[in-house]
Length: 129
Image (cartoon, rainbow, N blue to C red):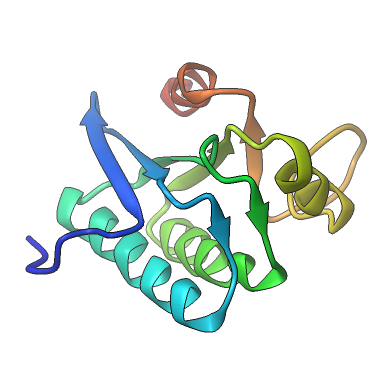
């Protein structure tokens, strides 16, 4: 287990699906991005999870640097045959992710992240074969 207490995340593991909730209202700045990346990767390693839901419902603002820790987590999970689903994207956060084509929305685009409306929907998506 990690010795550091998470600052930016809460987590729960149920039926092999790890749900990570970002507790910060804003994700901006290199220092926060680096700490978030470390916490995300440590939480996944500690849980030995390959199916991860990232709940961003508490987050109201992200700068482009917020993509860095999420892309690192996504890459790690894909290398292990796993999957990441983002959920809880609303308002300005949803706008940033859809405008930059970082989430799969409508239409055939090759986006890095899958998206669901909420945690139960995201978990259900990850439980499907």
